[in-house]
Image 1 (cartoon, rainbow, N blue to C red):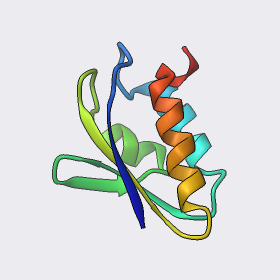
Image 2 (tube, rainbow, N blue to C red; image 1 turned 180 degrees about the vertical axis):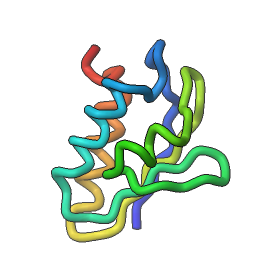
Image 3 (cartoon, rainbow, N blue to C red; image 1 turned 135 degrees about the vertical axis):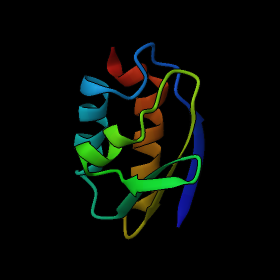
Length: 87
């Protein structure tokens, strides 16, 4: 399992369009991918689960993955987050 902590810097946080981009990127990987905010952890491939976290700008999240492409999955999602979801 691999994990990385990252701060959301996108003005709108991880809502609507950014969440959809995040989930569609996560879905491309075979690994189990989880997203954590505080004590709550959800499946990063579920749009409703990701939105339920209510992630806003300045929030620290943990992206973790376990499986055959875990490093690539976490790397891609961290890069997507750093790019402010290509906005």
